[in-house]
Length: 110
Ligand code: HEC
Image 1: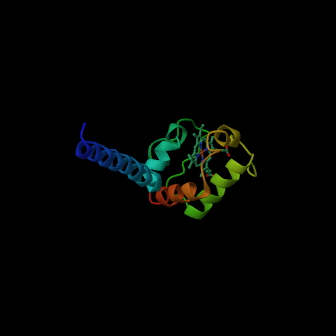
Image 2: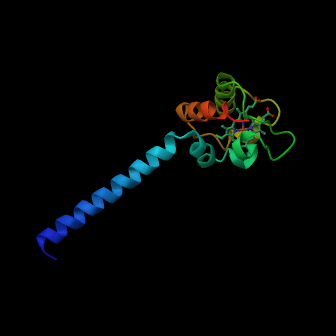
Image 3: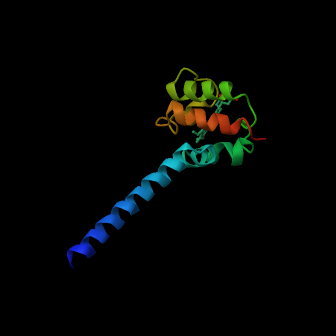
């Protein structure tokens, strides 16, 4: 392998890595993608409007500030009523920022 080939190889590797990093970044800032990536749909259903069980709430189309407060309170354990513990463990690593993006996206859904 000559020097030019190695350089091209290195440049392609860097570009490939950058593309992956950018793709992950785009996915992480989009409400629809985050909603799926964080498994919300497995309980609250598609777009938050078709929960999988009667006791699971519809979260589509609700006030964004209210939704965000509930998500944070359930994750942090300040809300412990009803079936909150079912969700708590699953959302332990979701950040306030990610919740906020999901809440803004959900508020537009019906
Ligand atoms: C394992 C199932 C499960 C997963 C996964 C889950 N939730 Fe929940 N979620 C619930 C249940 C059950 C409740 C109702 C808790 C109760 O009884 O008070 C709830 C409540 C909520 C509420 C409060 C609704 C209200 O009307 O007060 C919001 C908002 C919410 N979830 C958002 C999310 C988001 C966003 C995600 C993904 C980051 C998520 N949930 C993941 C089961 C889940």
